[in-house]
Length: 347
Image 1 (cartoon, rainbow, N blue to C red):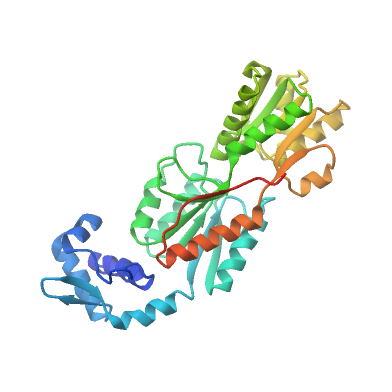
Image 2: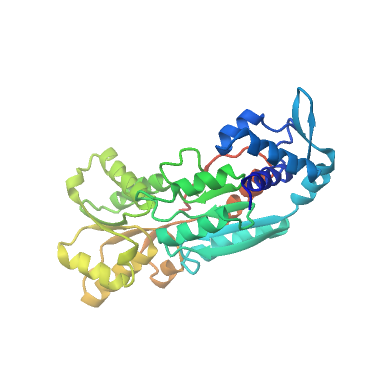
């Protein structure tokens, strides 16, 4: 496909999404040349193509404007479209509820929802994003980033996709390089502070922590935990931390056992990255016949019911988070301004 047609299709999507509704005017030729890094001739060909489609008209000495014939098409478009939801694990213990919130909100507004999973693998994420750049019809993306705690080679692909006029909303957290990314998530650092205060209120003074290092949620929760201890006058030397990554969790029970065997000392309290780790920790202590320390965790999933009274866990607003992400997506597709939003944990 010729380059000018590619550019015309991107601008067409922006027109139908209401992107020029406020002024009704397209950017100047110079601005489009700068944006797409092509020649002025290519931009003129793209504009000519849009004119032939009845989407724009030109006023001598004034510029290029959205044609009135495009107005109804814009309105119709707003009652539907394709939104791609990219998650790390579809069957993960909290993600089905998040997906349910997304799907309900988008479907009720006439959107088609497509769901794919990366397995938290950078190469899989890259393949998905490249398909969009190659022409997969997508109006918006709701995505849980892959290994957001590590440098990610796919950041440039997200930037290119947004330049195409595709709206992007991140779940939980984004990549540090994408400073202006729209994110819907939980207050992870604040959650870490809550964990420290909770364990201290239970009389704990020595601690062990198990956090995930390749997702920013784990880094933020750890930062909050340290802050909570220091604010309470507790030296960080009273806490020992173990880290794990996605590749370590094929067998959580084995992972936790190895971590504890490498440091057999018994703390007063544990803080765990999530309920899955906390449950594996409880199982280990039960198998060893040892007294269980106070265990604090995140998400308050069904696992807390399975180990009732053995895990203190603050609640993730799963379905509410999905609904909020979908609402932001609909607004962005319709040309509305959006900002990041982070939800409080449920006690």
